[in-house]
Image (cartoon, rainbow, N blue to C red; front, side, top):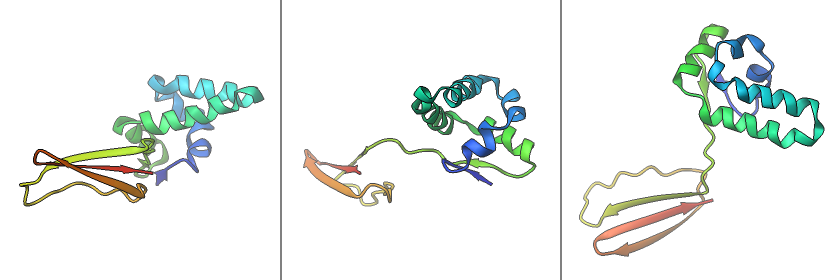
Length: 120
């Protein structure tokens, strides 16, 4: 099972039992609950959802997996708008990860180094 932005609210935030097992992130649920009661705070609720997806670690995945009885992965949100990489001109085997969601790029070469900047 994958937990992502579309289903995290339904599967995690509405489930009290899971939050009892994750006291280090309980403040996110408390803020989210407050945003559900007060319409002015709806943006804070959305921020709590994003913060949970960003801050959840392997330990939390294990807790959630145990609760649901199946392997669970949490889809991390890539919130960075820019990705930079650098390598030497002399490198024969350049290995850097291309990200599908970065649609534009720029290259720059200076003193034997190549720098590539990707952005959305």
